[in-house]
Image (cartoon, rainbow, N blue to C red; front, side, top):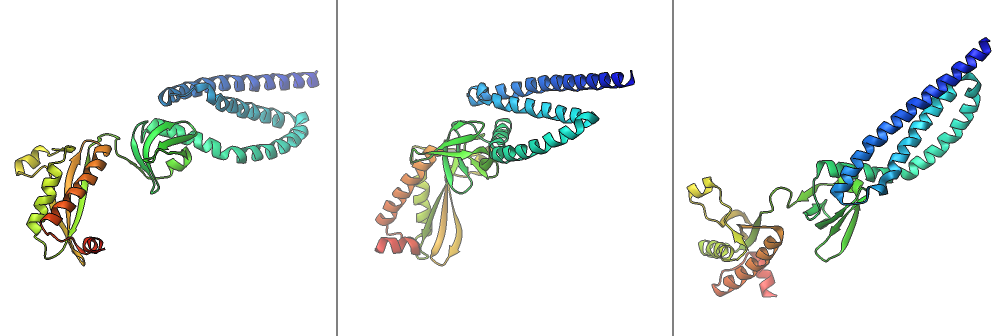
Amino acid sequence: MNMVDKQWEQVVFSLIVLAVAFLVSRLLRFLIGRFIRGAALKLKVDPTRYNFFKNAVDFIIYLIAAIIIFRSIPSFRAVGTTLLTGAGVLAAIFGFASQSAFSNIISGFFLVIFKPFSVGDRVKIGQLYTGDIEDITLRHTVIKDFENRRIVIPNSVISNETIINSTLTDEKICVFIEVPIAFTANLNRAMDIIQQAGLNHPHCIDNRSPEELTKGEQPVMVRVMTFADFGIQLRGYVWATNPIHAFELKCDVLKTIQERFQQENIEFGYPGRLLMNR
């Protein structure tokens, strides 16, 4: 009777472990399913593409349940040790092979939660990649650069890079107009030309704060930045509505400054003179 009772206890124990594993599995599948559906809705992708993630959770839970059963019942312990040794090798192989994929998925979840950028934002990833976010998936992010090429970057790579987002909260951009002039050039006239070139551009906006208005500051400020070997470094501060307008404004203003400097015989600093004499 004692042997029979002990066997029944082992059967009941196994059933309880499997029941607990089943309940934990259902609960985790429900929670993960809600999270994936929410993430997929934000990313505008099909949530069924990520069902493998829930299935992987099921596999891990039932594997743990099997380990508990085999290690707790003496008659199964030797067989379980042999099976788990082989399973451990296979798990190590599959784990190593899928490490990168799961890293990208987890990074994709973090991108959805913390939202350092959204589709349509103009960003710079690290020092190499600049463009507009075109698509975000749980594996990778697609950026359309200024040459209309698509850059596909794994999410795990993006998570480890510095992200410069030009449209996260405010699209307005202050454009720096850097102009070097010679020491002998008319400084005040050069500053006036830079200021007027910025003010006259159609993309220039007035972004002065109430305090700046009270102090009487101009919509376009020009300041002397430093004295260098080549001459005097000037910088104009011109505001534009968005990155696209800012790029067009900078190109046009630099062209206007070049033309006006030539008309009024204002010499550029050494790099400018070198280019003009070629």
